[in-house]
Amino acid sequence: MLKRDKERVGADFGEIRAFLGEGTQFKGVLSFAGAVRVDGQVEGEIVGEEVLIIGEPGQVKAEIEVGTLVVSGQVQGNITAKQRVELLRPSRVTGTIRTPCLVVAEGALFNGHCEMASPDEGKVVRLQPKEEGLQAAERA
Image (cartoon, rainbow, N blue to C red; front, side, top):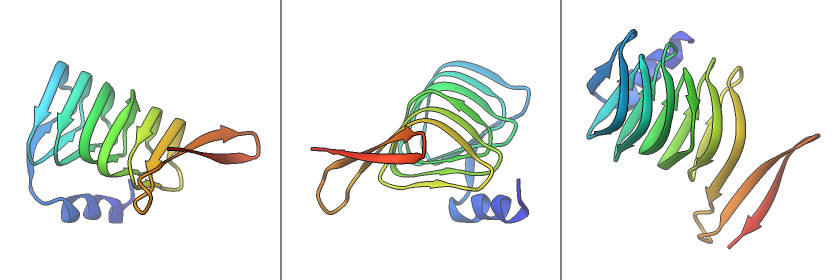
């Protein structure tokens, strides 16, 4: 992870209220308030209204529903974020992402589908992989 990425994660989201460190394994439903960082392994479901940070050593196989998600590690599963999803380098994400704002940094890998709510129209824009790049298909 780049130095500025580390600084940004710490600076933008305030104090981390819970931390699952490297070597930690959790199975089940993780629900939280405030900012949470995962550098270990989580399997199941993650639910929170605020920020979830998955650090570079983090490995998550879960359905995720949060306010904001920042990923530097690996995620397999569907993601719903009310504000934003940031895929930092060297993240690896597989699944469907639903969010109004998606940021994919150079060096991040995303395999799946993305559904974005259009703020002005309330519509969902679905991006699907295509051989030449991404294609957008709108639906109400």
